[in-house]
Amino acid sequence: MALSDMLGELAQRAKEAEDRARAASAEAKDKVRVRADEASDAARTKADEMKRRSNATRNEASDHWRQVQADWARHVEVAQSKFAEMKAEQDKAWSQMDADLAAADAEDAVRFALAAVEEAESATLDAILAQMEADEVSSKR
Image (tube, rainbow, N blue to C red):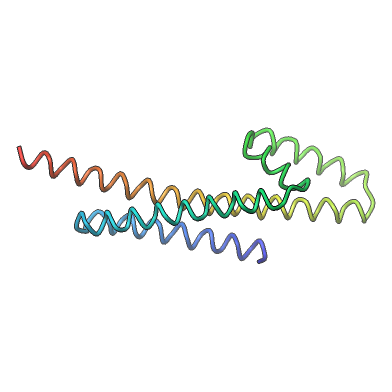
């Protein structure tokens, strides 16, 4: 899947999560509970998929991605510095390898963002459900 397609999928998925969270505020508690469970399952599935992918590909790109997850800000600084150095110093073969590694990093970043959207939807629906339950308890007093 092309990176631009993956970013399009990310934007679409984020919009869907936003729409469902907005709709949940006006829905019955049981329906929100079902949505929250479904979102939680989807988030768990994405996390499991990322873990399987990470375990399956123990190459330089996935090692680098684990570092990105540990320290994103440092990664951006190092990646920009390396890119500037490589652009000035390396030949076409090295540049293509670097491009391939950068594309793999970008793909991992988009997958990470997709998983984060799933988790954000799950957490939002859980919060809405918790507020509904709190309101229900308060109204019984």
